[in-house]
Length: 278
Ligand SMILES: C[S@@+](CC[C@H](N)C(=O)[O-])C[C@H]1O[C@@H](n2cnc3c(N)ncnc32)[C@H](O)[C@@H]1O
Image 1 (cartoon, rainbow, N blue to C red):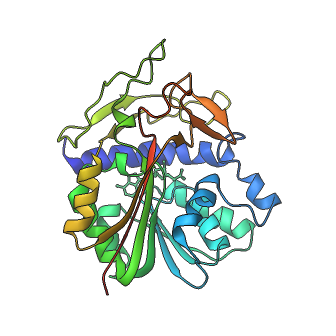
Image 2: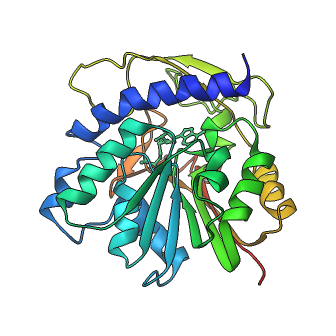
């Protein structure tokens, strides 16, 4: 299969998941954003320490899914555009924004086609949240797209699952940390066939079950952005995750970390924040 075919199969998988995520009573829980008009997603609430003051900034959220992080960026004062290749995700995002009377623009596009889809528009900040890069086959190509979307003097921010974490076997019965998947980007994807998703769907199965993922090493992500002309000023590795990856992880304040004897062994996430020289 070609990368385009893998991406198209992922699009169908995400289209199918989006409706389930928008209805879910765990995880995204869209009703909370309607009930509390100042609520921020846990992701953006953490990331705001890296983002600075967003008031009046033009922000592009790549792979925005059903818009909870996009809405949170809007609530911090940004004028937001969300981009995703899943039309169902964007339908849910538009409905969420309309239901809380918030302005936002949503563009349906493969991230690799984002420059054309946005007619070459540039942004003060391009933002990418958790669970995005693993759906992309070619990180160097992605870096060039991101760099083209940031205005000179603007910046990019990403928080992602750490590629070291993504190598580990999350289906073991014991607490050992065992490498199972590749750390570096591979030509062939890791292909999964799963009828469930990462939120409780009340037993409703995903119909399009097959998806394809790639890991990208920290150096590969760093060089993708650097070679494209961005200057990485921040690279922090975190000891916590936003979701349960290992059964034995400890939950605290809606975050998950390894027990004390393992907490310094493996990074769980990273934040990377490059800017584009003027
Ligand atoms: C885990 S979700 C987004 C993460 C976001 N932080 C969230 O939880 O809402 C991944 C999103 O990436 C989108 N996606 C995957 N591959 C894509 C591509 N090639 N172009 C654009 N969007 C893509 C999917 O449609 C999905 O909405």
